[in-house]
Image (tube, rainbow, N blue to C red; front, side):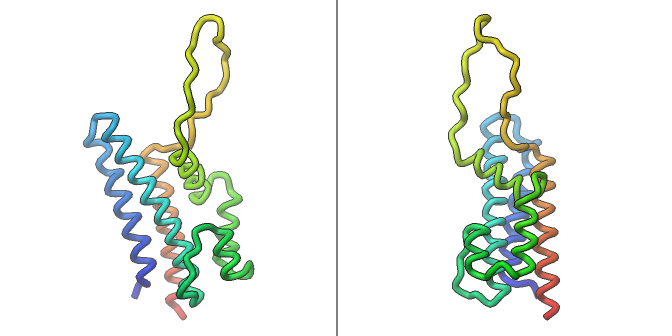
Length: 158
């Protein structure tokens, strides 16, 4: 039987996927942006809940870690899941890092755009932010789901 925390993470992932599935049905920019931002927020919530899920797996019924650092303080460094999450945090193309980038992007106002004229045109690479495409978000959601399913399976064996 799945833990209630695993079920809650799965629910957030399902809802995020539901929003992403509606992207093709909406042709206005505000609707697409609302669906994208909503899916990102649900994915971020799922990541937060993964930390609580890990704490509960180790019998910490009161801990509400909101970061990998606070989970480490709560449980210590010798927990396999903390090692796995730290590895993910160190990999530039992991689902954990993708969500870090999305959170920074979504939590800050957009950068002011400079006006372009003949006098100030310089060829530079502009920072476009993290990949918020439907495909990238779906890959991240699938990776979170796989991670949590593996955790649930590992701990339900005991």
